[in-house]
Amino acid sequence: MRELYSEIYNWIKHPDEDNLNLQSREKVKIVSQILLLEIFLGLLFLGLMYIIDSHVLKLDTPLDDSHPILIFFLVVLIAPVIEEFIFRFPLKYRRNYLARFISFLSKGWLKKRWSSFFKYVLYLSAIVFGLIHLPNFNNSETLFFIFSPVIIGSQLIGGFLLSYTRIKLGFVWSILQHSAFNLILLGMGIFFSHNHIIAEESNEDFSIKIIEQAYVDKHNSYYKTKINRDTIFSIKANDIRLSTFIDSLNLKEIQHFEDKWIDVKINSINGMTRRELERFLKRMIQSE
Image 1 (tube, rainbow, N blue to C red):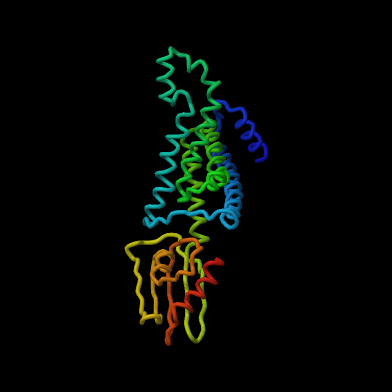
Image 2: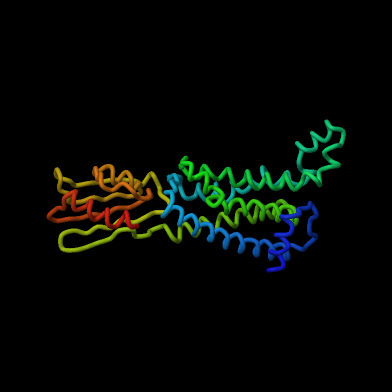
């Protein structure tokens, strides 16, 4: 494995178009080892992003209310194919129809010098691949762009690793690697975020439970309340935004929190005031 990683590192420094003539079993092994490297580096950058998010700049990621099946098709099947066709398919000169057209117009000038240009084409492809993931965040602050190499670091390195796979093993293998990585990320997101309790307390006066959801079904979304002026007796909500929940109760003291999809269950026989709920949520959510 170390030998493979060393080979990839040297190839990124001095890339070439030479493919490896290997059996499918050997290619599966190489892709698996590259995936392990991608996951390790992805987790490393995720940790750095957590530090940025906690101490430097709040990273604002948009919430998606698409059906989970649609998300699966988009993230695991459709996006990898489209992105690989755009960014990795043209890395081979014979598949780069724009380069061939330019070469035709220049009477073969580009074809003769393609090996010299290949390194820059590869680097440009990987960098642009990383940059197109910046819109995954709603941020527009100067600090966001200063830290952008870290924020999209996983995609930047992933662009180089996928390029290696595309050149050395073949285009289909880069699609499979891309799809597998996205599937792992999607699975990790569901495992760590879906049905995750972010606030819970129960006593003789009230019971509160707020659960984070990694994905939602907007057709099953509802928000039901039993409130008499300033006294809250019951709130039941399914697949709503945390921001919507806080805004609906006019809880102005809760300002700094990460928006997410939530289910809410609040019951109080004698009722609790908005102020009591606000104190509880401020303590539980803003420290979350």
